Image 1 (cartoon, rainbow, N blue to C red):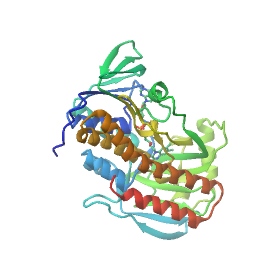
Image 2: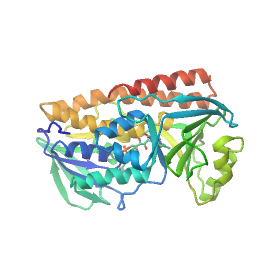
Image 3: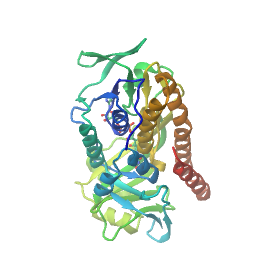
Length: 378
Ligand SMILES: Cc1cc2nc3c(=O)[nH]c(=O)nc-3n(C[C@H](O)[C@H](O)[C@H](O)COP(=O)(O)OP(=O)(O)OC[C@H]3O[C@@H](n4cnc5c(N)ncnc54)[C@H](O)[C@@H]3O)c2cc1C
């Protein structure tokens, strides 16, 4: 597909090569920008969880030309099966197809998704420097002077901070922003082989700790559970295993199967949740933020990665459309702010309701409304 090229930015630095940073790198490079990508992690790894790829997220990946690879290496499903926590089947939710030819929903292992994105970055000949971050970034009349952590320096027309929820770029250049706020919940996750005869995503309801399973490949799934989090909770691998097994004691169906078949070798993770929609402006001069650095959400709508990919695409689209970089950054911010606000507000409200053991009808109302709005074009 031919893309409109970008004329106001020739050289861009992307700080953070995760989901949002790589999406921006691909979208900018496809529009003729000379992109450099740096990441603090010398190995450019990602942890071993699965990730849910909703319809809107698949739509964004299609715009990056990565849908076929995700379909081939992940798992695509057409419905979500709802169960009472004890395994009693309640009903099936058919997931809507939001664009012709697009699968309804799916999942993939994060390392595989990263490999797909990394391979596109490499195909576009984008230089990637690892084990590197930015020590100083100063706006000048025509761009940004950057000093790197290895003492070298560079000058760029645009610097994109996509270094996630604890963003160093945010600390360097955005004094009006604050760290993400803990929501009082944590997410447990396990990556494990697929239970026999499981073909769709599953949700287990009616328990204080909601739980779900997403297929990620023909032979693997990940299961998540949301629990209340007490500040300071720390667990070693043995405790993670025994505590997660204990939390699953009352669950039936495939959640019960996972409890009975999980081993200490399966990847298990406990992550306290935090969220924040950073106040505007999302850019200072020619430094701009995207992804969790500026719109960090909780997993209640499984849409954080989708928002990061969309932001990378929208930034490139607005740079191609506007007459100046300044106008493009404003347009990017105004296009992304309301959509990210909706995702974060709805996700945080769902978490609060769960902690307060709120009315399931209110939960369904918030969830279904937010998902329907997410299906709208971005
Ligand atoms: C428990 C949990 C479950 C989730 N499940 C889902 C889901 O099912 N579906 C979904 O769509 N979203 C989900 N998300 C959200 C999703 O993971 C994030 O929104 C998404 O990864 C954000 O992308 P990002 O590019 O902003 O950050 P990341 O993908 O985290 O990438 C940030 C990159 O920056 C690098 N970096 C960090 N600091 C620096 C620095 N100082 N200098 C240079 N580089 C740096 C890191 O090494 C990393 O490569 C979940 C989140 C959580 C917490």
